[in-house]
Image (cartoon, rainbow, N blue to C red; front, top):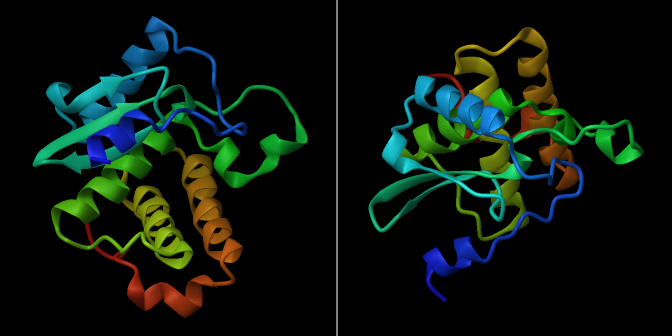
Length: 170
Protein backbone atom coordinates (compact mmCIF):
# COMPACT_ATOMS: atom_id res chain seq x y z
CA UNK A 1 0.00 0.00 0.00
CA UNK A 2 1.41 3.42 -0.92
CA UNK A 3 2.17 6.00 1.76
CA UNK A 4 -0.46 8.27 0.21
CA UNK A 5 -3.12 5.61 0.56
CA UNK A 6 -2.01 4.87 4.12
CA UNK A 7 -2.45 8.55 4.99
CA UNK A 8 -5.85 8.65 3.28
CA UNK A 9 -6.99 5.68 5.36
CA UNK A 10 -5.79 7.14 8.66
CA UNK A 11 -9.14 8.30 10.00
CA UNK A 12 -9.61 10.28 13.18
CA UNK A 13 -9.89 7.68 15.90
CA UNK A 14 -8.43 9.44 18.93
CA UNK A 15 -11.20 9.71 21.50
CA UNK A 16 -9.28 12.12 23.73
CA UNK A 17 -9.26 14.92 21.13
CA UNK A 18 -12.02 16.74 19.26
CA UNK A 19 -13.85 14.72 16.62
CA UNK A 20 -16.55 17.21 15.65
CA UNK A 21 -16.24 18.90 12.24
CA UNK A 22 -14.31 22.15 12.39
CA UNK A 23 -16.18 25.41 11.96
CA UNK A 24 -15.06 27.87 9.31
CA UNK A 25 -13.68 30.07 12.10
CA UNK A 26 -11.66 27.17 13.53
CA UNK A 27 -10.32 26.28 10.08
CA UNK A 28 -9.26 29.86 9.46
CA UNK A 29 -7.63 30.14 12.88
CA UNK A 30 -5.65 26.92 12.35
CA UNK A 31 -4.57 27.86 8.82
CA UNK A 32 -3.51 31.35 9.91
CA UNK A 33 -1.38 29.97 12.75
CA UNK A 34 0.18 27.35 10.47
CA UNK A 35 1.17 30.08 8.03
CA UNK A 36 2.73 32.08 10.89
CA UNK A 37 4.86 29.00 11.59
CA UNK A 38 6.08 28.77 8.00
CA UNK A 39 3.53 26.57 6.25
CA UNK A 40 2.44 27.61 2.79
CA UNK A 41 -1.20 27.62 1.80
CA UNK A 42 -0.59 25.02 -0.93
CA UNK A 43 0.72 22.47 1.60
CA UNK A 44 -2.29 22.74 3.96
CA UNK A 45 -5.14 20.25 3.64
CA UNK A 46 -8.10 20.59 6.02
CA UNK A 47 -10.08 17.40 6.45
CA UNK A 48 -12.65 16.11 8.90
CA UNK A 49 -11.49 12.56 8.07
CA UNK A 50 -7.75 12.85 8.80
CA UNK A 51 -5.66 13.25 11.91
CA UNK A 52 -3.58 16.39 12.16
CA UNK A 53 -0.19 15.41 10.78
CA UNK A 54 2.79 16.60 8.78
CA UNK A 55 4.36 14.50 6.05
CA UNK A 56 6.59 14.75 3.04
CA UNK A 57 5.03 12.57 0.37
CA UNK A 58 6.93 12.12 -2.87
CA UNK A 59 8.71 15.43 -2.33
CA UNK A 60 5.54 17.36 -1.51
CA UNK A 61 5.07 18.67 2.01
CA UNK A 62 1.58 18.25 3.44
CA UNK A 63 0.12 19.52 6.67
CA UNK A 64 -3.18 17.81 7.35
CA UNK A 65 -5.38 19.75 9.75
CA UNK A 66 -7.99 17.41 11.16
CA UNK A 67 -10.71 17.72 13.74
CA UNK A 68 -8.21 16.55 16.38
CA UNK A 69 -6.25 19.79 16.03
CA UNK A 70 -8.48 21.06 18.85
CA UNK A 71 -8.75 19.43 22.28
CA UNK A 72 -11.92 17.62 23.22
CA UNK A 73 -14.36 19.76 25.16
CA UNK A 74 -15.81 18.54 28.42
CA UNK A 75 -14.39 17.22 31.64
CA UNK A 76 -14.28 13.46 31.12
CA UNK A 77 -11.54 11.49 32.82
CA UNK A 78 -9.98 10.72 29.42
CA UNK A 79 -9.53 14.46 28.94
CA UNK A 80 -6.92 14.67 31.66
CA UNK A 81 -3.87 13.50 29.70
CA UNK A 82 -1.34 16.06 28.51
CA UNK A 83 -2.05 15.15 24.88
CA UNK A 84 -5.78 15.70 25.35
CA UNK A 85 -5.09 19.23 26.62
CA UNK A 86 -2.82 20.38 23.78
CA UNK A 87 -4.36 23.45 22.17
CA UNK A 88 -4.76 24.06 18.46
CA UNK A 89 -1.62 26.23 18.47
CA UNK A 90 0.25 23.51 20.36
CA UNK A 91 -0.87 20.84 17.90
CA UNK A 92 0.11 22.89 14.84
CA UNK A 93 3.46 23.82 16.46
CA UNK A 94 4.08 20.14 17.28
CA UNK A 95 3.65 19.27 13.59
CA UNK A 96 5.51 22.20 12.03
CA UNK A 97 8.19 23.26 14.52
CA UNK A 98 8.58 19.71 15.78
CA UNK A 99 8.17 17.23 12.94
CA UNK A 100 8.57 19.46 9.86
CA UNK A 101 11.70 21.26 10.99
CA UNK A 102 13.34 17.98 12.07
CA UNK A 103 12.39 16.38 8.74
CA UNK A 104 13.85 19.28 6.75
CA UNK A 105 17.25 18.89 8.43
CA UNK A 106 17.26 15.09 8.66
CA UNK A 107 16.87 14.84 12.44
CA UNK A 108 13.83 12.57 12.66
CA UNK A 109 13.80 9.17 14.38
CA UNK A 110 13.01 5.84 12.78
CA UNK A 111 9.35 5.16 13.52
CA UNK A 112 9.47 1.39 13.07
CA UNK A 113 9.43 0.67 16.83
CA UNK A 114 7.44 2.00 19.78
CA UNK A 115 10.62 3.60 21.13
CA UNK A 116 11.35 5.26 17.78
CA UNK A 117 7.82 6.68 17.66
CA UNK A 118 8.09 7.89 21.27
CA UNK A 119 11.44 9.59 20.59
CA UNK A 120 10.11 11.31 17.47
CA UNK A 121 6.90 12.46 19.15
CA UNK A 122 8.66 13.61 22.33
CA UNK A 123 11.22 15.51 20.27
CA UNK A 124 8.43 17.23 18.31
CA UNK A 125 6.60 18.30 21.47
CA UNK A 126 9.77 19.59 23.15
CA UNK A 127 10.81 21.51 20.01
CA UNK A 128 7.34 23.06 19.77
CA UNK A 129 7.45 24.05 23.44
CA UNK A 130 10.87 25.63 23.09
CA UNK A 131 10.79 27.29 19.67
CA UNK A 132 7.22 27.94 18.46
CA UNK A 133 6.06 31.54 18.36
CA UNK A 134 2.76 32.61 19.87
CA UNK A 135 2.39 29.94 22.57
CA UNK A 136 1.53 30.78 26.15
CA UNK A 137 3.55 29.43 29.09
CA UNK A 138 0.75 26.98 29.81
CA UNK A 139 0.72 25.72 26.22
CA UNK A 140 4.49 25.20 26.41
CA UNK A 141 4.16 23.37 29.74
CA UNK A 142 1.47 21.05 28.33
CA UNK A 143 3.68 20.19 25.35
CA UNK A 144 6.56 19.34 27.70
CA UNK A 145 4.22 17.15 29.77
CA UNK A 146 3.14 15.44 26.55
CA UNK A 147 6.78 14.65 25.71
CA UNK A 148 7.40 13.19 29.17
CA UNK A 149 4.22 11.08 28.97
CA UNK A 150 5.15 9.70 25.53
CA UNK A 151 8.57 8.63 26.82
CA UNK A 152 7.15 7.20 30.03
CA UNK A 153 4.74 5.06 28.02
CA UNK A 154 7.73 3.12 26.62
CA UNK A 155 9.66 3.09 29.91
CA UNK A 156 12.02 5.98 29.21
CA UNK A 157 12.91 9.15 31.03
CA UNK A 158 14.03 12.36 29.38
CA UNK A 159 17.48 12.23 31.01
CA UNK A 160 18.06 8.80 29.46
CA UNK A 161 17.42 9.97 25.90
CA UNK A 162 18.11 13.71 25.93
CA UNK A 163 21.32 13.29 23.95
CA UNK A 164 19.37 11.49 21.21
CA UNK A 165 16.84 14.33 20.81
CA UNK A 166 17.34 17.34 18.54
CA UNK A 167 15.96 19.93 20.93
CA UNK A 168 18.68 22.55 21.40
CA UNK A 169 18.55 24.49 18.16
CA UNK A 170 15.97 25.71 15.71
